[in-house]
Image (cartoon, rainbow, N blue to C red; front, side):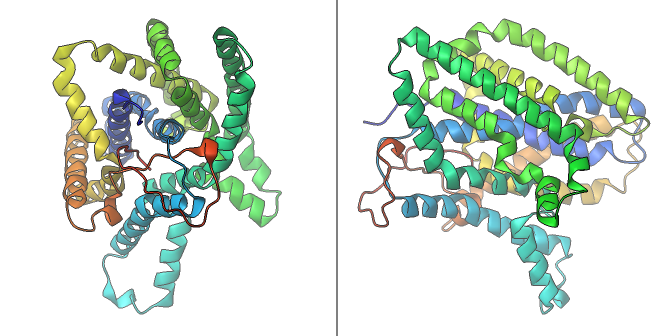
Length: 408
């Protein structure tokens, strides 16, 4: 028997998609030489509203992986489906972005360095600057059987205790993990750049490209697992902490905005509020719980039904939209960069955001309904997996159901 669908997960994915698109639209306009200070400050503050986007995708990917488990399946079949639904679209869009950055010049197609550069993009994507996320999240998918086994052992340990005691132990584990993660981010933001200079080339590269490493996002994955295994408890936590998270978020929003303005100098530097920073981590967790609680609150209000349906639709096609949105933004920027926008950069950012988000979703929807479109924007169907009875079967005759969706 299949588990009930968690409606707020798809809606939260829709919000995360919008946050990522807005973030990249802000990045397009805030660094332009003719931007006025009021617009620059407003965009810097708006930027902190988008910080939850990418970590929320990690959270939701984990939640869906751990939640949907009722059929055993062999690892080769599992990873094959993930490769087809997530990595193949990534490869397609990597080629598209690489060709676009070469200005569609056919003269280079006979040059071996053209293909060498394309191959390097498939490992460390630069032309498609947002595609790093797929490289990072796919590491979680590859290693998921190990994570599932560890989670199963933790569950077996927790069954010895009462429900109240289990919750206390889970809270203690997560607090320890949060402390360790904050320490990791402290090292990443303040120390790792200096470390890399005295290390061998392999370790230097690993530290320089640490944003591509799944370890740097492990806490959000753990948070998703907790949400999957203790959905009702998580919902209760989001509801109970909603008023407090409002104040926590507002306080951190003002503090981080002020810090960015002080440390940036004449030109705003968005990297001051990178994901891999302890204060940003606290802001993201606060945003995540806040938005989760608000979505649960909206479920009680029938007047919010059109809005929730819109978020649900956005969430369904968000993976394809995510892959395509940077290309749409580049196309629009080609025409807006020569313009003298003066004191209209903030307005231009918002208009661009609406256009990019809408067109990208339209592309995703169109490709999803075309034959073979799943190779470009991923499959909407997802199998249910049972990792408690996981076996490394090289041949499996069981067919997987296709009733769940997730963003790669």
